Image 1 (cartoon, one colour):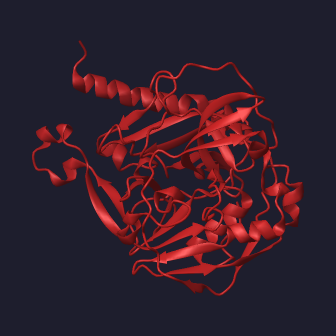
Image 2 (cartoon, rainbow, N blue to C red):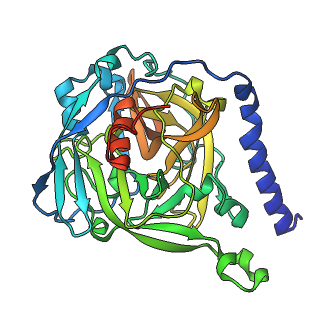
Image 3 (cartoon, helix red, strand yellow):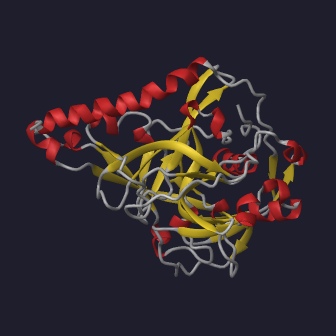
Length: 383
């Protein structure tokens, strides 16, 4: 029988091999595409709103349904008035007050001819048997343990959200997560009143007995959130909510000192190194552990990334990243291209198909989130 230490080392070695080997061919053949056009968001003066009731319940296992018309709907078919309405956003402050900011979109005419946005139809494949919801076949998740991994990039960019979800660091003071972790589409969840972000601290840092550290779980250092921003595309009122705008940005009260991951407009899956996406989260069935996974992209619409990465409730809000070619640096870089939302049933040609789903960062969403982070339009240009 293999000793626990040997088993742990083997797992880490396997993880490194699986991370590095599939990327070799992609590194040899970088894509040669022109920079993606990013429109400009022009915000208006914020309008005060009545205080939230914080009456919603947090929903960690988020599931939606979609048919063929829903799948093919995208930004290209939307009217400009509808887009500007959905790109307006609410800001929730730490004292419970909130505002609404409407926006204008400039330079969005080029979106109609944007060839980088996926327009492929859904490929119908034979159905497969599922072991349990959101786990496809053998469980392919890795528990990230030990100082060498928990504090190393990119795993160190994953943070916990006090409502039970996951988030990803995207600046020195901002965390990207799923909107449904803080708002149910009609009202903010109860936990959003005093929202906090948790940073993992490996047990060995606070332990003087090295021999006991392997059995301990990481500690969490909590930081209060200063303000929360949610797109109006998510706040639908009495209408049925959609995954398309399931993202939110949290601003911390003070900067953290950890590396963060930069954002990118999501390229076609063919332009991702290895055609793979990755994300790390705090799945509910592995309490206190950071769980990493990767898998190929199965399908993509204009707003969503469909895949079979194993995930459980609690992983919602994880930053979905891939190796993206950076034209300015002339190298492959890990960048956040989406936010893990949950599970979706697709009804195509009378057949139900199930996927785990991430919200893809489109040019418009990139412009919006980037404005939330920087507070100006000058810094929001895609590489």
